[in-house]
Length: 386
Image (cartoon, rainbow, N blue to C red):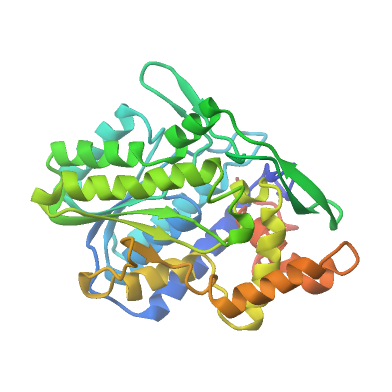
């Protein structure tokens, strides 16, 4: 099959297996160049197939030689359609890792479910005994509870309507978009899906099964962003969920203090994801931020961020945290000179100068590469086995 990108709305419905493999390969090569560190040796990554989760798996395996177990919820290919990018990413990672003498195994299923937790516990006991790090990088739009109740997350404000500039990705025009407030039920549902409850459930299940090493570290990923996006992010429904995630880290530290477990939230920088593409106003901020950070030579993608997490922020087993016990990988993004320039551009940008003032190409490059497209090393005109 000749695989081409098919974009519908804010997602791409196809993925290129060789492109995804190339994406994994380039991330592995980046981590190898950073050198070996004295880091975790047995790592569980929940949400391991794309984005920050995939980067974490690569950084652990190739940065400190860790054995890794990945949890994901991906679809394999059929005769008529490709697999999801996370399926191909995982396949490629395991192929490279095993070839390089690293233990790597994956469990494909709903990470919210009790069944997947039990599968993981069994795999850890049989193959690794215990794990010394748990990365929680789940990005799911909905959660099904054991009783069948389904919670759906929403991207809304929690106070008043919020109106600001927004970029139409289809024709590169700028207009205004309004984000409406969520109901109380919608806020609660978003917290259920994207908050820290399932993270806590995972750590409790792993601890009760005695598959966590004494002094194990667990890290969940979050985003705060600038004041510009506060109404729809930090103070929006997603922000409410992330605040619950931050509070969950404190509760984990208190609950499992006797086992020496250390829980952290790493606040990462703005990056293109399927979810962020769907949020009004946010993609325009990202495209402007990309341009400014690239011009100053401090732009980072997922693998550069997580490489810095392992090599700097967690160096020597001691986490570098702020006064709120948060690891700040968004420190470059929120530098005063970066934000000042971003806001100056935000005030000036319009449909006529968007191509000049924002990194539109960089935004779309990142978007397509998530699905395995846009790599110069791949001949996309050739038939490929999906």
